[in-house]
Image (cartoon, rainbow, N blue to C red; front, side, top):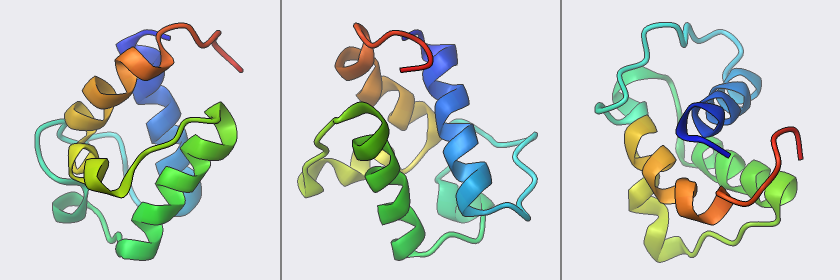
Length: 87
């Protein structure tokens, strides 16, 4: 997967978790929680969706890498580089 494809996957997950949020102007450098109404359970839902969709394990000590869209994409890029799109 490419960075853009991973970003779209995250946007899709966020859209399911927070359907009332406007994700069109999401700033890749600002923490999700500063831009959206997300609580810790919502964050765990994101992690669980990634785990379910791609069988990727994200250790709790790595959660801080997933605070922003940019950080999430950079964290996932090497882990999902060989995953086919739509997998």
